[in-house]
Image (tube, rainbow, N blue to C red; front, top):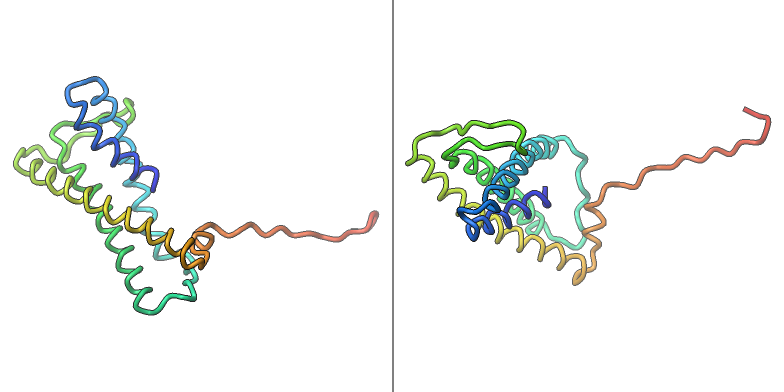
Length: 170
């Protein structure tokens, strides 16, 4: 998700620099294609957030800090939702999914498209700011507080089972 969000954000802003060129067309197809994948992953991730095992909290955080972290994560999910939805609703024309399948635009009213273009740009900017702050907070925890936050975010190591057997015995 992070790679898709970073790529689509950078590509989205670069596209403004190359409007009317072949690079714009390529970036546009890639941007919308990766956003389509990101939308599916976002939905899966959001559903999974209700079923996944609870992540153990950092011992050094207070209840207030835990509540702030939960709130910020909710804001990030809301902004991701706004970015994805407004990205589709702002489309004035259909787009190609990796040059393979043409995806129709859901709204053809230009006033509505322009409104969602504004929502998209604003939510992208706010999401970018929040993500940078979020990365800063994670680095603060890891390197200043030294509470090993990043290790807790990694998947658990697989369990390896060893069986002691003597030759010839089952």
